[in-house]
Length: 353
Ligand code: CTP
Ligand code: MG
Image (cartoon, rainbow, N blue to C red; front, side):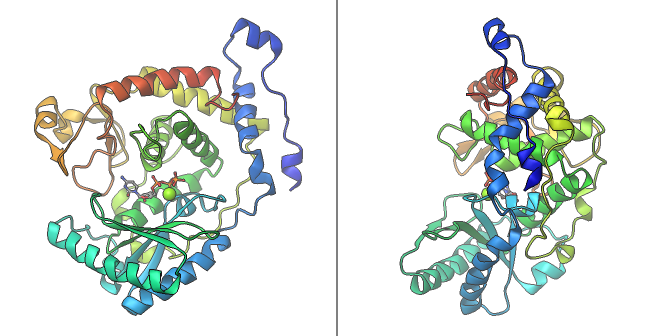
């Protein structure tokens, strides 16, 4: 694709390296662009995961022919599929879909029923695909089966839960307002994994989902996006397989992306008041910890699956009641996050090393 051939390749000048001057926005933007150069030779179309979708539909149908299958997670959020990234599926009943703005049940009974369905599904997947690795994960907040399909894509399957579909559709609706913002999100996600901040790596504490909420919150605070009422997102209006949203190269040679990256880092280092405020897409403007009763007192009492809930770095889930997506950020991890935010300025989100 011709656009990518035009990408500039210069990085930091010798002088900048010697003087340890913070790189300019243009240099930062171009460095981040370069880190994603491998995408230029990839087919990012979401049809690449349709095969996996068909395979999972076949297995779901064998358990219960009335269930429908929805894809969510990064493929839905970005409208592109990056090679190697896993895919999230959820099996929903007809009523789940028709009541597409309904709340997900969080009771032990609901969890038990979900685990039961997933147990049956795991057996079918194992029967049909002998060489695949199928793991039933029960200790998590949401029961899930994790499938490693060898040469084909890896995926997670949950059941009867609309929230993943809804929050992915919400994030996507935001990125559709300004599709190049996906570069900021992708840059931040890549950085969070390399820096050891992302929950998918050992010692990490915030999921990619949490970082996406942080990116969108930052853009909302800057007035770069218009607020969307989370309640307006209805599963009944969401496509089961997310449509493709082509990813164009960043504007102005990456200068704008670089400015956004630096401003994102500055926002979370100096402006976001982590002691009092909450990253939230639930309402426009500022949400305080006080408002949600995410206080020191609540922190001392709250537990989830026996684990402590921290209110040090607060990210409100737009659909789950009283859920801090940043609950695993301990005081130590919050300091670690701050150190990395600071460092990310010089390393252009760890793209220069
Ligand atoms: N999700 C959620 N609540 C969480 C974590 C995740 O509802 N606490 C759902 C979200 O819908 C999210 C999806 O699970 O879009 C996948 O989460 P995650 O893997 O963190 O995000 P991805 O965008 O898929 O990033 P990655 O490429 O790292 O897999
Ligand atoms: Mg994912």
